[in-house]
Image (tube, rainbow, N blue to C red; front, side, top):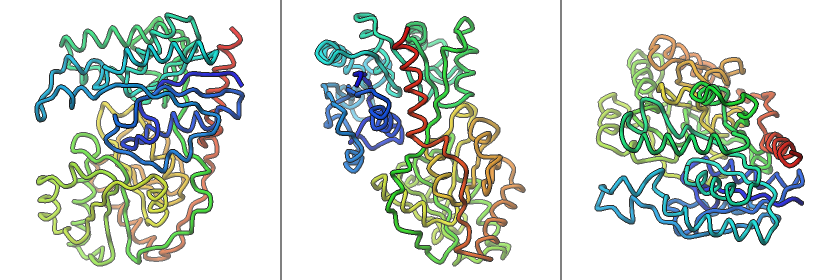
Length: 414
């Protein structure tokens, strides 16, 4: 097999972000296409949150190279304060020299034929850029999220903005191909870099791995109409308040019996245990309805999704319009009804034509009320019946890796 070097901060057992699945699944399925992955990442001690279960998916063909690199916000911080200079382009900027040094050794010893880097964290791209400059190897730079969010981050006009804009431009200009997760994100790059050849920027969606659902027991329903959200919740762009207000109103109007509904949040508790959120829940009279659960291993989370009556997706801010939460694809595979609170954008484009997906702008209270009531009534009529088979095989991780392999084939032949 042809050796390829994958530079990725998020790699098992790192477990804080669903972004870990992208590099992991590419490394799992690239050997099927004739590429042996060498993964350049950080030592396990760098990760605050770990999911050891993900290590089972690292293929035997993969060689993982771990280097030093510290979280600048923790290492150089005083409480919650730290010197932002040491976190450019991200908190793991100290990984840069160690990653370059190890990467060069791996390239020489393994005969690496191509480079792939993925962000966040963008330090991975700077490592790959240096390796590209030193070796001339073909390089794919993968953006799961934007690096520069114009008008939002870094702060426009700041020194950090000027520095990071130049660093991003260096990556865009020097990479042989750019891969992104949505057509919207591709359009953002082509709009900001007008001289960029359109064929240089390719879309490879996130997806689901069919193997993750193998041998999983059938759903065990709780006996209540259960709305489940998995992952990060914030006031900024994943705010559940519109849903909570609608459910509280439907209970008050007698349209939903309070003992028959439960709203569960799985996997992120920072905002959900804050005074603002907990007092808001109490104020709406939903203390017995809302449940906050801690993070659990990925496979256990998938099993919980199968047990829910409705899966909740939150994505509602201007700066996230070009993105699709990675969990959306696993939601689709699970086959439960999906309620997505999102305005027009990449997420709504994905879901609005798919069966049993309700896409609602969170500012549209009347439509949200109708959606929740319709889902609830459907559940009351047949609590066990709503299991949806969807035609989504093109989002399966093995099939998506074929797209990456095609780009590698093009570059390897140049």
